[in-house]
Image (tube, rainbow, N blue to C red):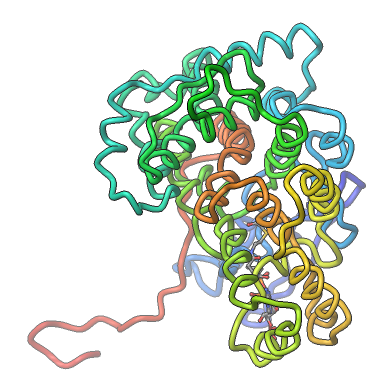
Length: 432
Ligand code: CMC
């Protein structure tokens, strides 16, 4: 979690149960949980465990992909500040950076983009099973299912130790996400599926598959295309969050990456994670107008509701992604006109940031607070918001999965528990 300053040393601990003392090495600001196992009350004792529900203070891996300093509002991919990447690199170059550790040169960048564009088509049978979903099926449910289903089209993906095979799956997953996402939307709208256009950028092609109607060639608005590209970059990775942990944990069983990515997408669907942007818009419409903001804030303070798009497990002063998103919002509204929900959001932010409850709980707008307002202005229905998040996060999931698979210290994930249930009892006797 912290940057690499020398944090090595030794932790001296004395077990009050036995009076014995132990020296536990500290490396990179952490002790090894397994070193606790030597601390026992007797020879038969299993050894000391650390208890950490929701992993509030447990590092599950070493990673060189994303650095976050939640107190100072810093987010970096492979060392580069998110602000520089969002303003100066394309989403696909950022995906390359996450996966390879370095930004691509000009030729590498072109080759990478064209390789991705080459794999955007999905097997025609995918359309058939999307057709089986109800017209009002949530597109995130369709996405999770179709990502999982891709594993059946590429059985060679099971060979997770073959680097060349795995690279193919990485490319396919990044390439096909927008296609699956747009198909899910068009199914809900009863529209024919629009096929990928390899001449367009990653974001531009997604807009094409979403919105193309009768025109022979869809031309995305460059401002909206750029805004979407930036939003995808802002979502591309966020170290060991819920969905990324799902990707790593499920991937640690050596299942194929499609199945692991489907698990990650399922985790992202939840309203406390990637589903929050959808909930923000539902909340803003429920509030309806600026006058209703104070009453809503009071309900949040009474614990009746959570303020969606506020708060973060890691960021405790501000979310740097939220700052960039506000800039993007201004650009988008120049093209689309102002989203009326923006006034409610701005007032909610203003009142909350001056309120003791939010200050003392360190609750600030997170990435999801404004992203939904932009997506809505661009024409996306709220149900597509988590889907957009998932498209952006795919390179991060894959980079983390690759890193986990290559890490010799990793094994199949298998946390311990503290059993607090019944002692031994028998069907034909009283409980012990
Ligand atoms: N509204 C009102 N109170 C809140 C909120 C909120 N959004 N978030 C946290 N709190 C309060 C919570 O009630 C608790 O108060 P107390 O200590 O008095 O009981 C305290 O703050 C700590 O909350 P927590 O749930 O223990 O904090 P956490 O670190 O486990 O949760 C969070 C982080 C993001 C799940 C939470 O802030 C939340 O539910 N936010 C709303 C959902 C949201 O916007 N999620 C998107 C996160 S950013 C995108 C992503 O990476 O997924």
